[in-house]
Image (cartoon, rainbow, N blue to C red):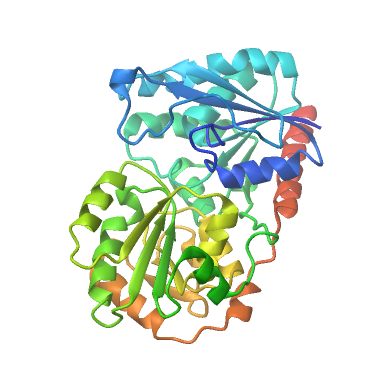
Length: 384
C-alpha cells in the first residue's frame, strides 16, 4: 500500500527532535508500506513570527524515511482561518506526483484539513490522527474547521481512550471509525540503567534528589508551578535538583527566574537527542509532567521504561499511563499539591524493575496498527 503521510510535527533542521513519536511511527511504517512523508511548514515574515513559533528553517535534517518539506505563507491570527486552505494548495503537487492509495495526516488543523482538501480533489481516502491539543481547540474558527476534518476522515486515530471519547462527544465523530493507537517506546534507548554511572557522566552528585522534565518550555506544561513546587519541596529535600530538557518561548523567563535564586537548584539543558534524554531519566529520582492538558505523553512511557516513577497531573490520557503503582497524580495548576506529591514520591521506595515492565509496546506494533487503519479506509472506499 502506498501511503502519503502529512504532518508538520516532524523533525526540522532547527528542531531535530520535533514530532519524535510521529517520526518513529513513520520509520517503522516505512518498513511495511510504501511510505512518503510530506511536512507542510507555515512560513511567517521575519517581523511577524508568533511568540510560540520556534521554527526557522525548512531545510530537513538527515532522516531515515523518505520526506520532503513544502511551505505556505502565513500571518499570526490574520490567516488562521485560511491556513488549512493554503496548506492544501501546497500539498496538491506532491499528492498528484505520488498517487497514494491513502493520505494519513496527523495534526487536525491546519495539516489534516489541508490534506483533506487535497485528498478529496484526488479521490483518495483520508485517515486523520489527533495528538492532543489539536483536538482540544478553544477558538471557534479552528474548532469549526477541525470538526470538518473529524467528519471527513475514514478513520480517526487517537493516542488515548480519553481523546477518543472527546472526539465522539465534542466533535460528533463516528465511534466506529475511531481507532486508539497509543504511542510506543524504543526499548533499545529507554530501559533500566546504572543510576550512579549516569550521574557521574552528567556531573550530578550521587546524593542529589533529581527531578527531570522533558518537553516544550511553555506555560501550559505547568513549568511555573513546577519551579514553585521544587522550591517548596527543597525545605524537606535540600539537595533537590530540577532538570528541564527542551526549548520553547518560556526559556528566557525560566532563565531569569533561575538566575534570581540565591541557591540555584534548576538546570536548563535545552533540546537533547533521545539517548541523552534516556541518560537523564536514568540519573533521575523521578520524572515530572504537570501539564494543563495532554494526549498520551510519550515521555512518561519512556520514563517508566527507564524504571522511574512519575509525578504528573490528572489530565487527558495521563491516567491511562500512570496509576498509584507507578506515580502520583495531582490536579493541574496547583503548585502546593505538586510540591506534596514530589515530597511523597521522593520519600517512597519504588520497584524499578516492575516500573520498567509496564510498557513493552514497540513502534513496530504502532506501525502495524496504523497500517491496518489505512487498509480499512482504503477497503471502505473501494466498496463504494
